Amino acid sequence: MNVPASDAPGRPTDPLTGSALGLPIAVPSTALFTDRYELTMLQAALHSGAAHRRSVFEVFTRRLPEGRRYGVVAGTGRVLDAVENFRFDDGVLAFLSRENVVDRETLDWLAGFRFRGDILGYPEGEVHFPGSPILQVESTFAEAVLLETLILSILNHDSAIAAAASRMAVAAGSRPLIEMGARRTHELAAVAAARAAYIGGFTTTSDLAAGFRYSIPTVGTSAHAFTLLHDTERDAFTAQVQSMGAGTTLLVDTYDLNAAVRTAVEIAGPELGAVRIDSGDLLLLAHRVRQQLDDLGAKQTKIVVTSDLDEYAIASLAAAPVDAYGVGTSLVTGSGHPTCAMVYKLVARAAQDTGDAPLVPVAKKSLGAKSSTAGRKWAARRLDDEGVAEAEVIGTGPVPPELADRQLLVPLIRGGEIVAREPLDAARTRHIQARGGLPLSAAQLSRGEPVIITEMV
Image (tube, rainbow, N blue to C red; front, side):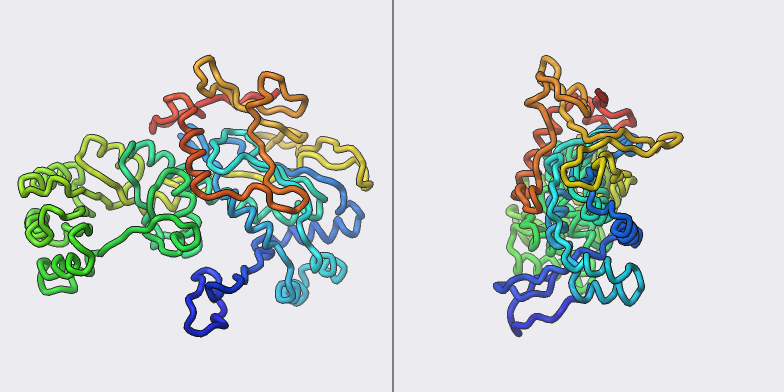
């Protein structure tokens, strides 16, 4: 992405915006992260007079990706930031005019756009199931319809990554996971993926922009190129240890693994932090390297494995003497499911154009699997006698008294003002708790149905 040069020469800049640190950050407008038909619908609704009708849109998914037992809500914090920065500045308006996207009346309306409605949603890190009203947007039709593509773009991507990360975290147990997929996806998607992975249970990232933007701990030492650069592997290891200390992680599979481990311990001593294996039969090699390290007196040296891991490969290494996993491609592509198929549907709108008109339920009537349920919904999670989740209960009428304190939707934006910003660690902790409240079968990697049922009442 091209960013403007800093107006403070010599001063560090935000790598995602180009603004000088210590100065107000010029956050780019998010208004064009949308589809053209959102604006053409707006124009037609302004002409018909219906644009200002109070409306309720909901985000949900009709089904989980095949084999998933639960979904993970991620991207909520990014949605709040994106809505806040949804502004039609002069440059955006000039583009819309030049391309004849909308007429002058609509451009004038867009020039003053600010979202002034309400948004409720599942808190970030919570789990979700088919039909869960993950996000509710209530405002005028004009305001709400503009946000559809932006909201779905963020939630579909981030929730898919977080769900994959959660499965990998379950497979890894107490062993830490390193997110290292930046080179396998778009540079900005990589930052969002690292954030979502952290919510899902990863502990660190290799991506510095993600560390800068979201304070996720970053890690990384060297690649095979560093070893190949030097005349010998011993020279490479010596340079790295002298630069980074004995606690560094040495990559030991460039040439001969056995010889590399021996050389690594000779140079760093028993205080060597870790060795990384990036190829071969990881199960077999991990056992051999662990035995070799122990024999050399490096009993505290850890073993990190990488090499195209996914949740199944991680699970297969459960009995191996592995201390940490690095995951890239599979994670940032949602481990085969890069989207959650979330949709954004109008479920209620005012009976008339007047501001105090009552809401009436609406829904598309479709053949097959694309139908939806009309009306603004509430959602609650019913627990069994042991305190374990047994059903996602969704309804449009009164909330049953026994579910009153189990409701899942919380206010995120009120009257256009964000009311639910929170540290990323809060979402991460929430996910661990939510996942822990599911039946044990949620941890199964074998294909199956959602771990709890969805009840519409």
